[in-house]
Image 1: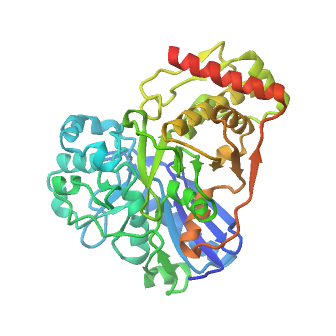
Image 2 (image 1 turned 180 degrees about the horizontal axis):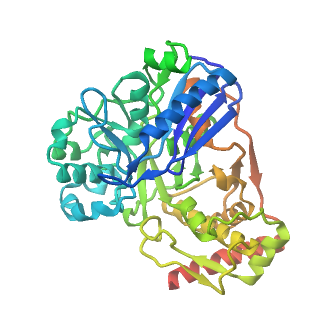
Image 3 (image 1 turned 45 degrees about the horizontal axis):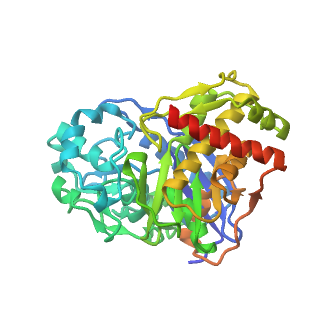
Length: 461
């Protein structure tokens, strides 16, 4: 199908967005957001799906009147799914994957989860393995499994609400759930072990149409009843999709937000180390993609104390390089390539709100990103998506530390454009981008030496 505009429902871990994308050039015509505030319970911390749903319906109505669109699709963060009753309602609230209460059944879950060699999924903290969430929920509420008619991955929770069709998608199943075997493109042994193999909704391709909008929703929003709703996709894989259409391997995409996810396409052969938060993602074409991740956006906010600071100029960046102040990993110590390490400042801690702190934190995030890229066999250019694509010290340090060409995408988020491609297909213009070269040779040497010194300090930490 060829449509002029498409509406994207983007459920991020920090914010929920509605975006209208023009398919002729993939420009974003409108973006509206609401915070993704977690409700603390009972029965456990869970997502505010009713609040999101009201925001989505009102937003779709408003955006349709203002801009018009001919299709809807959904993208969301991973590590989440929904347990649905036969009537389509939630059999249990959608658990927040950062809930630490899952630790009480962790050892029992470890006894039954498949090996990394089967799933490409490392054992992660809290509820970051969807299989661990399901195991905990069924253990805490023995009657829950009988009440569950279908289990859907998170993007398809929203497409089910729009269409009434039960589905899951392979990019979300392949996102460290423990439920999928990406090497054989089928379920892992875990669904059968948990007794839910026949309850997980049929996996669909992200670009397939699930159905038209439900009539009652069309009436409420003012949208046409025949508005097609596409299956949907995991958000990091949405960021990757435009580059799969327009670039030749090798290259890597770094999708930034609450999570920084590095994905290597056509890179060097490498043995992934699950203890360092490397994993196998599944892209929109069912292909296994070596990946690594850390909670970079969360670390950014923690380190800066949510202070608002203007972008530093070149002189201010060079001043930080000369002072050699550093932040060492890890601010979020249970994820990423330096999981288990204790963060500290080296050579003094810059004041919160200062430009120096902003630059130092940006360097830190770039150096952790470079380490993630090395763990997944990165080769070729590095394409940076999301908010870090506007961060000059981050881009400079990533260029120096990775010894790679760094390309910064200029859109607000590559996620919405990638999700739009599910509707548009290939053959569209290459997205706007800027290539970041290192500055003058003196500053370039400072960046390279800073990166070397940081890596030595990390080994000593």
